[in-house]
Amino acid sequence: MTDSLLRRAQHVLAPAQRRDLEEMAALCAADPVTNVVPAMHVEVALASGVVPAGLWAVRRRSGWSRSLIGLVWGGANLTYVLPSSGDLSEDDDVRADLAAAIIGRLTRPAAMVGPAEITLDLWGRVEPWWAPAREVRPHQVSMSITGPARTVGALDVADLNLEAVRPAREIDYERLLPACVHMFIGEVGYDPMRHGRAAYEDRLHYLIRAGRAYVQFGDIEGRREVVFKAEVGALGGGVAQLQGVWVHPSLRGRGLARAGLGAVIDGVRAHHAPTVSLYVNDFNEPAVAAYDAVGFDRHGAFATIMF
Picture 1 (cartoon, helix red, strand yellow):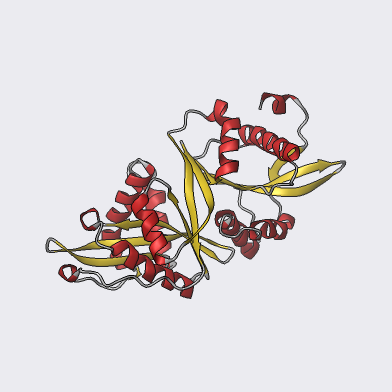
Picture 2: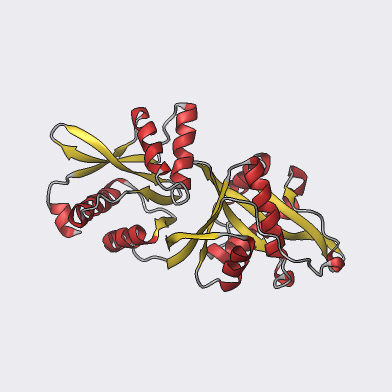
């Protein structure tokens, strides 16, 4: 890393231009499941003609020209599309230059998220400047499904008086919000209602309006409550990435996740994108088992560095 700061960088990080967008979309399309988040932002820019401030181009210097070789999305989370050149030395130079540019041009995000090998490599290079990390999750299973969900067996849930899984409506917001917050605290480690409440609530309203928040209600101790929920957190390149999959803590182990996921997968494929993806911590064995049961296939590994 120090060497990369001392020499003249052969690769630069620069704000994306409209002329870059089609090429960026093609880079994302090489692996649409892995690149769904940056693809989403590129597609929005293509549709609107407005390039967001968080979209950056990775370019290789060659004389007076600057060829596009990758991209970075620097929002609340930092993610990247950085295809391998096939030359280990060249790839190392690209990552060294990119790490130096990230430190110099971007503020530390809430998290670095992306393919495990690249994420952990970049983290090793920026760690002296961005440490400490609040948590490092080095291996998260990336999964996807491109067909109908696998049918699961009948559930013994007559006591719950379950509604069908459906897209949430604004009238559901007040009951859905506590479930989302509970999931967020358990997954991310802090209460979003104390840190960034307005942005968190705005996003949930947006997902509800877009038909991208799914919910199921049932009876728990005489109260009508959310028993299962999930959101399409990212949508781009023909892929819908599920986030926030949650089952009420008192009902876990009864098969609600598998049944709910089946309904969500079929709904999402019918209304949003033909491929459904997600990523999950490898140590969360019950969740991995539920995703396997409904037909998800493995699609590599992610890593997340949380600050």
